[in-house]
Image (cartoon, rainbow, N blue to C red; front, side, top):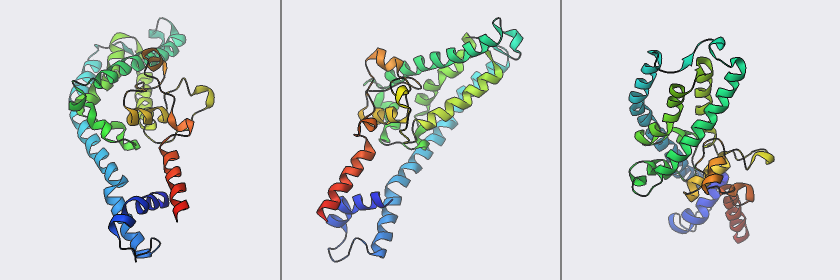
Length: 253
């Protein structure tokens, strides 16, 4: 938090808010500054993300419940026992790969469609108000936007056979993954950087708009010409920018 406070002092509080006689390291000033940053900065963003996400999940639940109802009524291709799969255990593992491939492909194109200028401002723009997202932004969408991007997960078992336990496990995985690409942890094993769409890739999507639409993999971004190597892994990400500002601020003091 000292980084945030120092940057705020350098660019806002010292030149525009506090009198020159009030030192930056004064305890009372630091407490007031932290209160202002907390209420109007990151904490305010988290509150907005939570508010939007909560409202979105509520409205999304109605069409989602309809899909779940069709599942339990037997209209899907979900099954209970492995022996119901014509390929046995190999078929189960194949279905996991198929689910990931199918949903990644569909979400890529749905997501890219959401960026079309004719509809972006009505739907997907709400999610992009968070330039440097936190994990709470993972479900902070316009309800229709969120439902359309979740639709491939629900559609898959109506098209392809899938074990019920595998389906539930993948549903949990999907939610954890969605949170993880918004969590600001840019670490990813070197050989997988150009394969896996992680948080470093996704924050560039929030910052630069027309890149890295994928959900799990970079395949469709590469094929669709929208792949961007993560700025954070080139030393040009948000954290690097803050460190640069900090260095500049320290030189002037």
